Length: 203
View 1 (cartoon, rainbow, N blue to C red):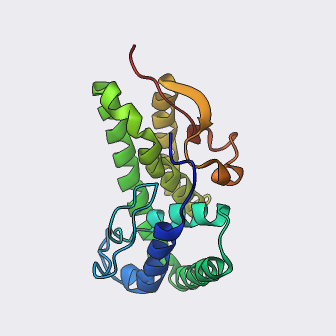
View 2 (cartoon, rainbow, N blue to C red):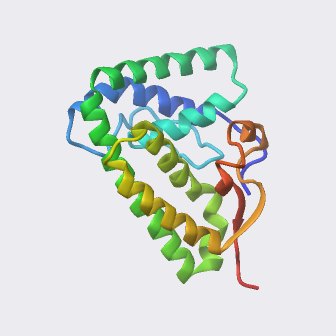
């Protein structure tokens, strides 16, 4: 299970930094953009670590989605709104490069999710407890697919995700929301079923 309370500090710091560097990121050929490590962020209950994470589109989207679900102070909400507006403006101005980068990010995250499921099959007792943190990958995949809408390039990737979801369901136990309960309202169980439960562990 995840933390009982959600501290938005680290996710908000990451989103602000990602929005600031997003234009330079899209103009580059780098998929995992190292942001300014001189601006450390505090630890998050969702595991973002001691310093700013690398910038990816999926990383921005999944953090922003949690922040939009959280109860923020007026100052925090203003900072999030500013980051979202900057992200959207740059995305709309550079749509072809954005779509290409989304596809690259999506392929990489599908690989990472498959590797996690592979590791779980090999070492279920070791890997299952980390599901609540690793499932951030699955959320990023979902949100990246939303960004592609019905683009023809996404169809093969959607089929791959369906196959990975079938693998997950084979060892899935439905249960409580994996992250702080205050965020659950933004992630309805019907769509985000993989955020409500855990992986089996051998007896």
